[in-house]
Every structure is written in C-alpha cells, then in structure tokens.
Length: 267
Image (cartoon, rainbow, N blue to C red):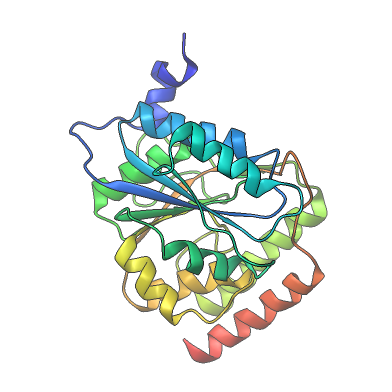
C-alpha cells in the first residue's frame, strides 16, 4: 500500500472537494545540493501529482562547485523543462536575492519557498494549500513552535525540530523570542523559510524588503503584517539537513539582531 494514500496520510495532507486550478511555483535556492536535489524534486513531484496540482520548480543555484547545476539539468530532462527550470547565478549572492531572482521566472499564481536539504518536507504543502483555500489567506507559513494551525485546521500535528543540539535550539528560540518581543508580528516562527505566498503579494512585499541574508525571512513577515496581508500558520516538523553543512554562521546571527533593531525603528 502506498503510504501517501493511507487514511491517516490523506487526513494529514488534506483532500480537495473540487479541482484546484491554481499553479504552484516552488523556488529552491541551492548551493552544493547535488545529493539532495534529486530526492527533494521527486518528493515535490509526487505530492503535486497525487493531488492533481499544476506545478513547476525554479532551481536558483549560486554556482555550486559540486555539480548541482548538472543534476538540475538532468532532472529537467526527466521531468520536463516546463517542470524543472534552472536559473543559475554567477556566485553565492545570498538567500534573499535568490528568491528575488527566482521570482522573475515563476509562472504560477502561488509561490512556495523552501529549503532543498530536506529540512522542509513536501508532505506539508497540501496542508498549506488547504488552509489558504479555506481562509482565503495571502500567506501560509510553516511553524516549528505551534501545536495547532492558525486559523484552526483539523488533523494537524504539533510542530517541532529534529536533529539540532541544545545550542542551536536555544539560538532559534531566542531569535524568535527577541523578534516577537520587539516587533510583535503575530507569527510564532519568524526565522522559518517554508512558506506559501500569493504571487502578487510576494512581489509587493519583496520590493519593499531591504534585508538579503537570513533576516530576509523575518522582514518579509513583519512587512506583510504591516501592509495588512493575511497570514496563517501550519505546524511542521523541521529536520536538520541530511547531506552537506549548515550555511548559518556567526555573521548571520549578528546580522539578525541588527535586522530586528532596524525593523523596530523603520516599520
């Protein structure tokens, strides 16, 4: 039996009562993700196909030296160049600008941003879509720090983190607590990067966003709330990357703290 077709799995993922005519564009920023990319693409394709959703994946690679681009080109031959769209850049230019670059090539009316290293499992995407449709939301963001969705959605499970040591958990919790206290954004997981946006909403917010590093995710949510866009949250399980090394360093942590202060004084 296909585990994705079990009663428990279908309840968790969500079932649609009518044909969904929207198209979903996934932006995948990559750097040295040669081992991860084929599997995450396979998982994404499986979820979209099983739910009869129109889709495409925009791979934004920052000149990976490990052959990530060659793997993406092969995947385009397998799935079709209309499904896997490789849009490389000349060098490692940052996460925020990767989304901006990828957005230029999206043809869907909704955009999903996520990591390519299995930290974000595609199985949660149907829940994002179900919540968005049920409440007509502009943005749905995954959260590691809630046990239920907001607005309420049936059959959700508590969010969490697996594979992190105590230090990294404290850093993440501390970063979200700092931002929540200073900025009061009404979102429980500001540093997460697994989200669903209306295309028009993402284009609007991204033109106003000034941050380009890991602060980018936080600023997007803060500005979305300030602009009056509706935001929902779905609990997700975050799993530390399987292959490769984390790209979060001390400079990003310092930059995050500076970003919180900048947003406090400007938004």
